[in-house]
Image (cartoon, rainbow, N blue to C red; front, side):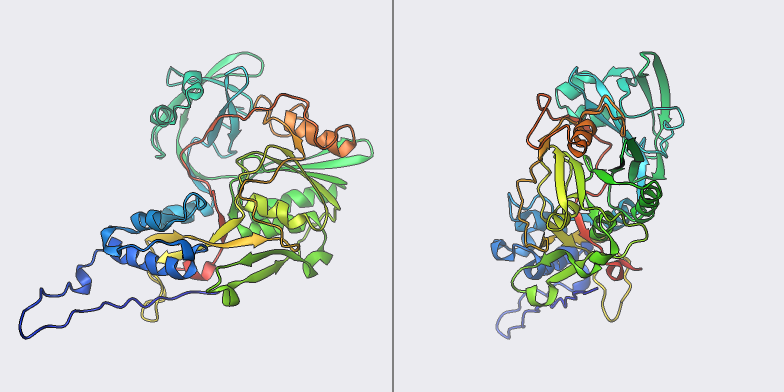
Length: 448
């Protein structure tokens, strides 16, 4: 993997025989945050996708890398460049989560429902699933907070993302009975495959994959799911990416490759395009990869919402030139761009393995498919609009988006159709602990 190194040069003012200037500031009196600020500034000036739009600024006016990034960001287009704590970021990409593992949404009747729950949540063994009504948390009615879109009150009620924090949930189960469960926030590894099943529909065996995020554990989970699909003779495939906000490009490459067959390893999956200053060195093409259980299909249906972003959009866009791709649900997020990662302090010859404190992740590239299609900053439009039906669990064939996807495959539904009045579900998650960006993984850069 390519790496970029920067040499920071301190210009020391010369002493005058006529007038003594103030003593120069020794290098070691710069704070770590100021050195990190300077490092990010130098990185952005070379690698930022929109480097020609960076305003002229005085670096010393800013105290840390977060502040200078906000000033250098190409707004409103760049909604994604970020600076993060190294350890927290790496934990998120490895699937480490702290909380209850629950996501909630408001249904058309203004009931708050479980939208998703991780299998390692302490509420999973109690039977809590997507579709359950959450009436109260710690005795407080949730519906008014959701109807008012009061994220501040919601976060206060749920408390910090700290292991050991306890909240009490009052649920209404699908059988209309009420149950109260106390849940303790904990640190655990999340599952990225939410559901994997095969529907036996006469001559068709329709595989269904609900996929949450593109992180390190995803590789094994995807291989297991597609091995199951292949064993069961899947003839069709639905990939549900409705809340998948992104992650590693290598996992997107893997997922796209599992849909087709291994003859595609000679074909372009996606191309990365950098700014004109570094394009000759950094522009790169990636073919489909060889996988253990490819389905070899010539069509696929995706389920999306506005939360389907980044790596999710890479998978869809990469397959468009090669097979029949349909989208059911809502317009995707619209992020045809991604970032390389740099750990700070930058490695150097004298210190090749520094103790990283920051992750710098400026937008550095746009991606296109083999037909050079990309640039969909307004999102990818669905062929069939369908509601995100939080009243039913993943894989329930009565769930509206899945029902529409199945109808499209079986020929009882058509592109452009929408059977229900369209609405968007208001969803609250626990903090912001999952990848929401498109990351070109660079293990050498981050190896301690």
